[in-house]
Image 1 (cartoon, rainbow, N blue to C red):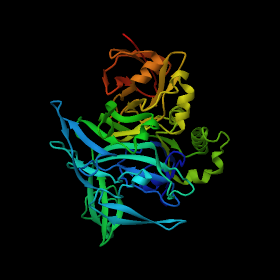
Image 2 (cartoon, one colour):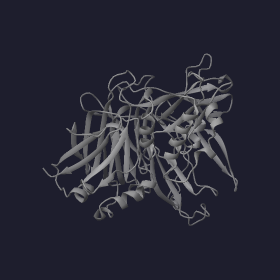
Image 3 (cartoon, rainbow, N blue to C red):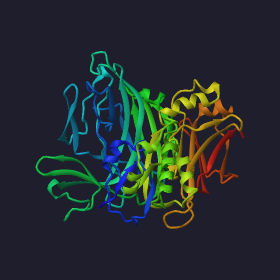
Length: 504
């Protein structure tokens, strides 16, 4: 009997869990892998569809379209890469995801119908509701740039809004209030159209290997894709123009990035506010520890679950929802890498078993800090900074575990403190070299440290296993109102990082 895979529901969304494939158990029945799985690794790169508000859904999920002569705002202004000579080369929008979800609102429930379309606009602009034109993930190409499976790159910028009238989202006075940038992403992919009748495994006969299918059209047609790999070290840059959605910048205060040499910038032109994200792909790994399938390991698993739920319910009892029988029948046990308690879970597991990288992917993605941590930002930072608005900053790393929360202000040391975690060795068995980057806005730098100069210095200290050392910056710059600092060359497993800047 095939062992089943158990997912920790508090750390992985239901939609993500449903998309994961169960693979044959390569482990001994006497052992169980306990894994940290990143949403970016193992090729789980799924295109996105926009969703309009409905009578039973008081929210908007927006995938921004590319800017055109008819769509000038709330759109992707440009996607570029930097060639070996330092020149920025503009990408070209190739095609949208070839299907969209046409949701039929039936009052108490909604019916979702897949509709084929070559039009990048899934839903037309609705000015009366403060909703711009909505799209879906698109494929872009770049002159002179390839990836391991061709030349197409999946690109999307997604955001969330809530309707002002929650009880009646479609009321005449209900308008979209833009709350959060969801993600900014570039991924090398190959879009595929396969016969639905032939899809019986991950590698159907006479069809190229593919990851998954997002929609099944008419005439025995399925829309699928496979995730490829970046093959060079190019810097990518996405610029997005905001207008109706500019309120996103007052709620998406802090970003975490899966990029290297990262930077973020905010500027304006005659048609709106432009936010720009820049960086190089980084290699991110899924990690796993193999433990005996015993009652003692079951008790460890319950501890890991309780660590993750402590923020939500300190009295949570994992054994009521995850029995010993479920554990003994499980294929493996999976934890997320981007929850507030991921580092503590990592340290707990690593104290009893070695954690090793089992798979890797090149990743380029920006995500805002968790909503729940915004309150911690205002209560934990210096009181004089509570009125600071707009995008405050960004942190980036190649760590396996990288918590997407706003950094903690340490009033005793005058520093911003972070914690990340990864394996001591990489997948090839060599020392795993860490990278960490941080950007802070000029207003934050002035508020927290009193600096007010284009020429400032930064001190970054890294504490690993009670050993603290100050490391040299790899690079620093000031772009579009943000100080950017990058450091590399340190080693894991779970270092604490502190940043302090001052006038020279």
